[in-house]
Image (cartoon, rainbow, N blue to C red; front, side):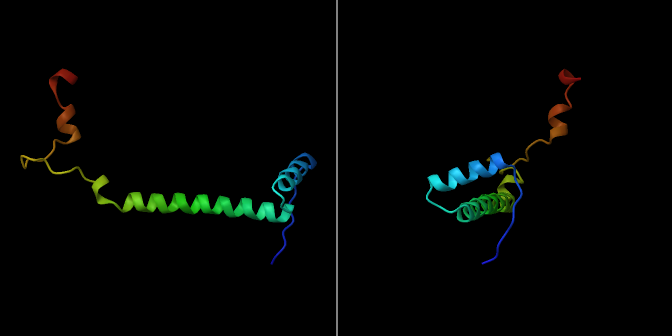
Length: 83
């Protein structure tokens, strides 16, 4: 295992010690678990984004039942009442 030195105010370090002790963990183990949790959240977000953008259904509208195409944005807003 590798070691790491962190710099923080005494107030932050004291709170870190108290949080670690309340969970019956060493400060080192507690910080390691915090970082691991942060990475897991980040990985889950990245996976969800990749999944979302891989779906083509979100990129094109569904077909209409009557076979016609949906109007474009320009067609919808190019009306006399909106000018």
